[in-house]
Image (cartoon, rainbow, N blue to C red; front, side):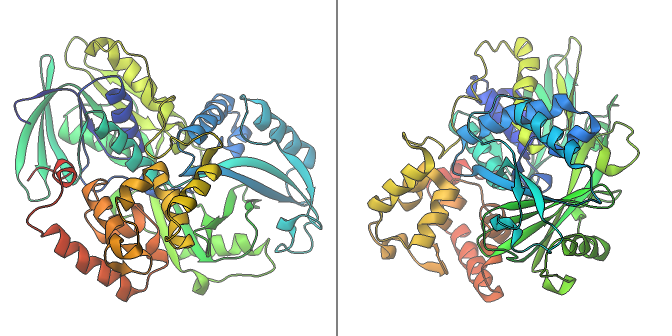
Length: 513
């Protein structure tokens, strides 16, 4: 590695860094991505799990951002139909909220700001007859229904990194970039592995996609000043037992003018969020506090007949959003758009990413590589909006038709396991299962429904190195397993990582020692 000159060194393995690595690799550039922790370990696995235009951003007149996000919503639904799918949202309405005519106007704009081919438009609904009206308090008699999308956010990051790797990129997880320096037309970077061993690499261009640490990386590792900055805003979520049996999600308007979502989640749960709280601590140590839990419970209880308390909360997660600082008065109104800053002049270029949201990551990546392409001699056009993500290449008829074929091919797989595999791996399912023709051939059942074949795939191919990688970011099995079952997974992982030899894929995806 020390003897190679890369076209592009990407610092940061969140959605923006992984998206940039993929876009650049698809154009034939040599790419090295380093991430000090796991892929998507911080902000990119702590979203509300939505691919959406951002209905509430219309209130702040961010029509350009909403249009861009709505355009990308259609693109992403096609690229990864296994981990991204349509969802219908219901917005209950009463006299204390924004006028109904205003909401109708907003939804009309939402339906028509960008071309829409996959998702149906918005409608008014009678909640006394609509399935989503049943769990609500009786005072809510009318509402609105519209479309957006859901996403497995951490898997979206992993699949971008995997596609980049399959097109020649090198992905190093648990590898920190601790220093960079410009030497005329090259950047030299010091990378430190998890074991503390350092090595020096060089690249023709550098991408700072460090998310919440973008300012700090410029200042401390690069020794440079930035003309822009990010504003750190904490968003927290709670997970409670399922509050309703239908598949609709809710968007609720609250007295403080904020909105929160209640989303069907992982079959047995309801995901509720998010908060918007200014954050000044270490982004790696972010966590929900009691006030946020109480706030989310209180807001939800304004709507549902079945009220919840903090005692009902089964799990929580928080993330720090590195929002582009636009001097907005409050955290909720800070723009979710992004800005790309290119520096370097005639020397080696450095591009820093400020802000952004998961829905627009692919467009951000396209624009970032477009800015660097002339300096790197890249002539191939962007392919990231046309090439499906790993597992997303479905036959005619789409995801549902493919699931039918998978059921016929693997009749011995329990339906619950097959459904989860289909949503996690899509058409890559056969790579997880391999040549197995029975459950016994999938290896030991490490925990209920979690077989050795899948665990090996996640370690060997998808860079998993800890139980959190396996059971939270690559899957959400942590929500379904007992502490003892999670211990069984941890024991298996220790043994497997200590094995003297693993597959070629495992060696390729292991960070340098």
